Image (cartoon, rainbow over all chains, first blue to last red; front, side, top):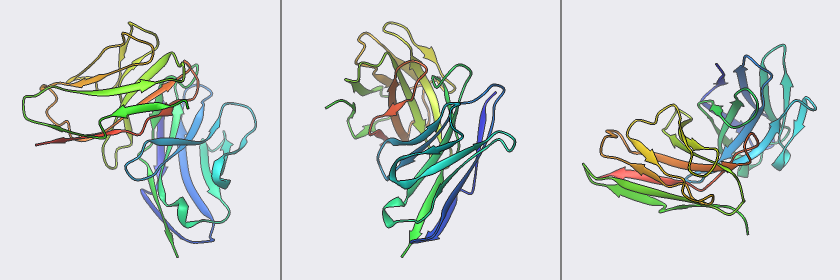
Length: 114
Length: 111
């Protein structure tokens, strides 16, 4: 069965600092992996996805993630945090055969300090 | 402008009452999904539908029901059997097997 672990329910960084949100997955088959962002009282917005092409995936708003099969990780990074990045971030892994059944991590709340 | 709409934004349920949450999409997606979000627990799948007139239980279907009579619509009913309905409910749609896109959500509160 697929599972996702996001390390750290809360992450706080200063404006302009590196953002690193950690995601480790477990999957019995080659996975599809996703990062979504959620602003307060809103739905989820897709940041980026990995679907077995390039291992370094670039997304919206300057975010990127690297798929590392040996470490079963898909960490999300951004070189320089902006106040508007404050939100909750979810990592998700698909089941076999595609993205029709997603398993989500618990989420990481990112706070940006001025 | 294509997208997913959910209504209402806030919904209040009295004890013993069934309530229905609306989800509509104009993305021409075949698949639609309902998730429940509780603080600190991520999203959990309630029901999903691959095509019209067909739907499958997800991980936490007890106390919920759905219908899929039209491609564009996938309403969720929270029945009186759901003893802890307070949560944020999210609807999503996709081409089957492809990326899921989410609506803005409905927050259900119990009076």
